Image (tube, rainbow, N blue to C red; front, top):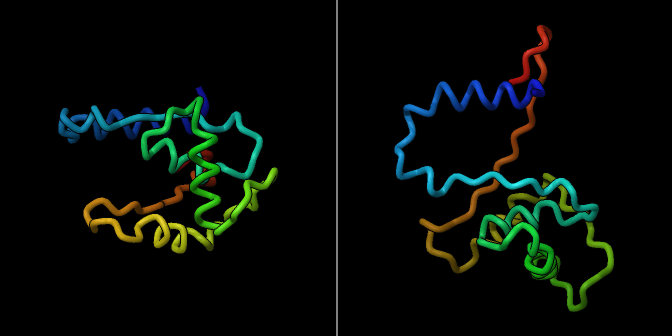
Length: 118
């Protein structure tokens, strides 16, 4: 198992008892790393909003098209930089009730000098 996988497993074990069992019906993990396009962020959001992973491209393109205010679907979408995430959040939350707002957080594992991944 990879060190990231081990880290995730340790964190899960430590915190599992603290999680309300009713929460588990909302916990899902999906692998989206097999796609070779610039729709990574949009695909994650589309799946979060209920699109099936294997059918998420159409929803992802629609989200990106809306954000970039495109009239036609380009063959290659521009990459969305981390600096744009606040604008993406504002765009997606327009007109939504505060309690349903989407917040985007990006976590990048770091390797300590002792080799531990945190």
